[in-house]
Length: 387
Image 1 (cartoon, rainbow, N blue to C red):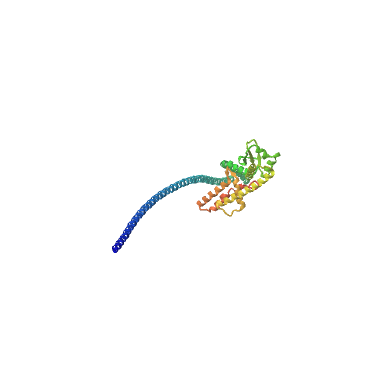
Image 2 (image 1 turned 90 degrees about the horizontal axis):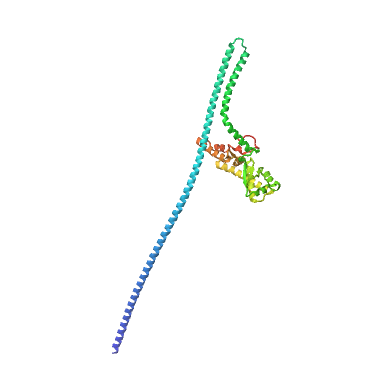
């Protein structure tokens, strides 16, 4: 009985253990299945989120790429328009330069044709004179033979008669020739006279004033005229003495006129007066200080202009004094044209022509640049500007 109870208890214990193990296995399996299901759900959610985020990232990248492409296209189109405008402006400037050069070349061709025509006319006239001399020689010989055959006609009388006859004939022919030459040269006389008069006015500071010998300084108001004149005229006398330029104050509203044939001194006076007006301190000592400073600046600008001309034309080794004279041409004008700019143009044109003709270009540019250098000197230097 006791043994049966022990067996029953043992069996119950074994069954309980087996049931417990089975229940544990079932519970563990359920737990594993639940954990696996939850993991799958979580993984699916993560994958879905990742796909959604990747899609958002792709769309954002596409939008950014489109923005960059649009921005780059806009910048490219803007840059293209600006470059097109620059190229069009450059083309217009080049076309204008070409047209100016064509006009200058045509002018040179016309002048060359005129020179050739005059040379041809001169050759014809020389031939006519030679023919006339030959004719006169023949007539003299005929007269001598005729007179020698006249009985009782002395050699002295024959000689005197022949000379008188030939003198009259030569005078008549010479008068006709001189009249023709005078008519041909009369057309050029007025032009040459104007050149000489214009050059003389620029090189000598006389009393005659033209529009090219005056400068106008504008004033903020008419009260400034009284300050420029100063007490008992001290200020205006100080300015005229320091600059060598006459100051004309008349009824012209808010303006004074600077008169003088020296363009450099006139420019110094103009700048000095403008600075005095801006500064407001107008008295003799200040006037002298400003004029000295401006004179130094103008002289420096003359030197820089000469050096720039030498550099631009590629002509090195020119004396400093010659460079300074070239710079002074900036303040000279001839036939309403700035002589400095004209000399630069002539230098480049001569260089181009020399290159086309196979001649030394530097020598040609040098000759063109210096062809009007004499116009930089004033009346203190004697001789024509070409000397």
